[in-house]
Length: 265
Length: 259
Image 1 (tube, rainbow over the protein chains, first blue to last red):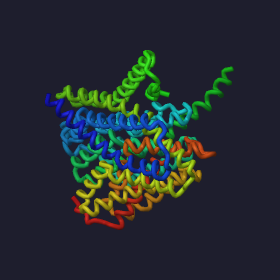
Image 2 (image 1 turned 90 degrees about the vertical axis):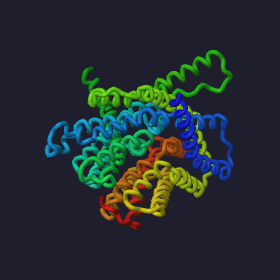
Image 3 (image 1 turned 45 degrees about the vertical axis):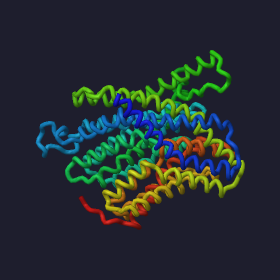
Image 4 (image 1 turned 60 degrees about the vertical axis):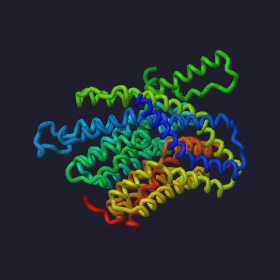
């Protein structure tokens, strides 16, 4: 009973804060739609029902995350960065950045799994699927992005443990993105850039930030300000690389297919 | 297209067949959401059972949370297609038909600034940065306004790019070069905050709206392809905050207590 009341209370609070988030959007759109453009909404009732559904869905989603997944995720992030767990009975001198294997694995899985469940990414993938006329598969795109986010979070975790300076790490990432831009098929580039920004959203940021801050607090000689930040940036950078890679792979396969069939015939 | 893009049943009078079709669409949508959530459940369960070898102590709460997450995600995707996407597209078409560049620019800035300035994730990040870097309330507010302005500017640049057909990669590469140039000049304490600021500005409601706006705009201008020209707004909105925050930290440095 307590649980139900608690959930109801959280739902009301989440609904309120989601509505508050939407107010600036409604004000801006309302002003331009009715004052500047002086146009009525087509299908106004349907659109309003849709927006109400989005807000309600997001509020329920956030409460579900808060009570079901975030507490577990945070506890696990702490446990995995705990020196006692990492040492596993070894002396403290024997621990270096290679001792954190299971932390890296967890970081990859966490980045992948939270990105697949990211609603913002779903919306962009849906739109890309519609616009491309079916040549981009929304689920395939999301898996490519999630692989990138997983690699990004894992690489960011390695960076924290191995103590590589954040600017050095980011510059390498940027140079890779620039190189990929010129190698990948033109049409995918804008979409690939966008997926970087949408990866780090409602589900991923809280979980990944907990991992980063936990690591920076528990490792000796790190500051949460300099080392804890940057994990999200890394999670946003790598999906660009994997999405462009996914397009290169698709292009390569479609180019290869006719040649191999003609060789057979 | 995957099953989750199934459009909601039309608003025609509900005959028995329509009802069944609507229920089937709902069922597919719920299954789609459940599939999206599966990886998180597997990861947490696997690490809990294999690495830590602990059973979950509050299984009921976790299960309840998961049910809510699936339900919420389903409603969200359902509402996107009938609500947010059409609004963004209608606005884009209306602006394209009106043909007033100043109003379109004003709209892009207002949308970026307005949706970012009150963003709870941004308030949390600036508060955390202020606490760790030793910046007071005025510094935190200025940081927040800086990020919101950056997002507004990003949408303006993005909209201009769609209209004028600038290739996105030169803008993004130019932005990266600016980030690399600003990083060594900025105080060390602001660098991490700046890099993360780009990731927290694009919220779950703004993203679908922006995507629909860009694609709608590119689709209603002759010679623009929605795929090549419509995307990129979100990328710009994640990049400009990094540059703006680096510059902000250089212009207004705070004495950082080194821990």
